[in-house]
Image (spheres, rainbow, N blue to C red):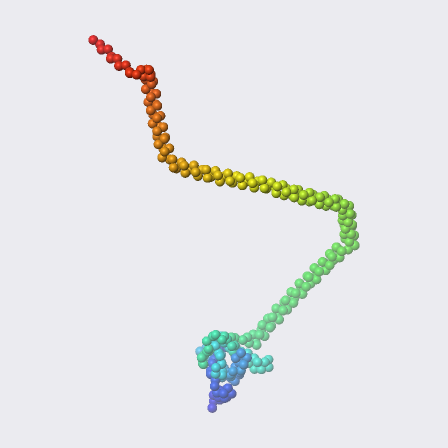
Length: 294
């Protein structure tokens, strides 16, 4: 029996012979060997079957492994290198993924996530150490500047809080106390005057409120009477409109008769101007004949 086949046989025997195969691909295997544990969410569910360069892309390492049947590997599961302890060897660790994701069929490829190698970690640590030296040097210079500024600030504070300034402050405070003592009676009188003015203002406002209250009732009565008068006027106008509409035809006839009478009077006046003797004669004389020339 070949060694690889024998290893697969041992793996099947260890997990009861009921396992299914899967694979994943990494660019850095980190010393992972056949027989290494396969963890699903931190639980051992299988063993690595083979670790070799992938024939289709030699820059990637193909990792073949078997896990227990019914292990819920799904499309959201991710395979990566891991370790159970610091002193232990590398293992293939698979995340649990998502319960709603589709389950992977046997022989499927699981998405992988690269893990930094020890060389990359060491290089980053060296880079961090180099940067740390520069940061320490920079911080030392800034601390010296801060120390100098703090010394200057303390010197200024000592100057401000020295005896000469203390005497000036004490003198200023004494002047303020004297000013308050001198002006306090004036302030008291001013406060009394303000209180008196406030009281007079309150009395004036109360008197104004009383005056307004007294004048409110007569004004209200006048407004009530004015409203009644307006109502009566509106009623009278409505009645007049009704009467005018009812007699509209009669008014037109009367106006027409007046126009006829006026015309008759105008004709009578013209007739009297031409024949004034018609007022005293019953019969009008015959018109004279115009003499004819022989």
